[in-house]
Length: 221
Ligand code: DX5
Ligand code: ZN
Image (cartoon, rainbow, N blue to C red):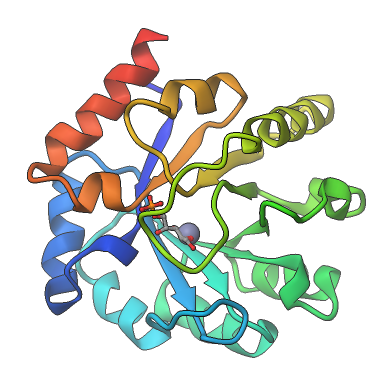
């Protein structure tokens, strides 16, 4: 059993049949369902909210990995918890009080993630890492699917891996943006264990083949 996790992003799914898309990627071997929430304020795009999360909750037992790209963030957190989120990740720039936001998510019984844009410094981890379950490194600027992987993210992933290993706590290192079967091995080599992929999975004719080719690349390294 591989310790890597593949998280298809619904951002690239067919929105007219989200329930079916969730079932399809689950049976194709997804480990998590990545749910990108955008507000046209923190990022220049608009997607879906807690009501849509609740609607897909009944279609899968897989963990729902909610990536909040919204500002302000606190008001919406209880809504996503009640809608059935399992992991809630937010961006520190979108919170007035990062420690309070972490607490809100934790008190609601969800795992907590902190997300880093390409230009966001890792010093946000200085006083938070021990309280996190997941660190999300954005390897594109947030807002859109189908962008190219920013290669300088690799050194950032390595730096986060070192910080996690020092702590000796099980914290997932998730990477999001531009991941394909031809770069996933390098991303894992840098230290990632959880891989978000939108266009590389939902843009493929066969979701199983797309996920299998990522796992193969991970196993072969
Ligand atoms: C971007 C989102 C990503 C996006 C990834 O803001 O957070 O999850 O869906 O899409 P791809 O894999 O197409 O880069
Ligand atoms: Zn995302």
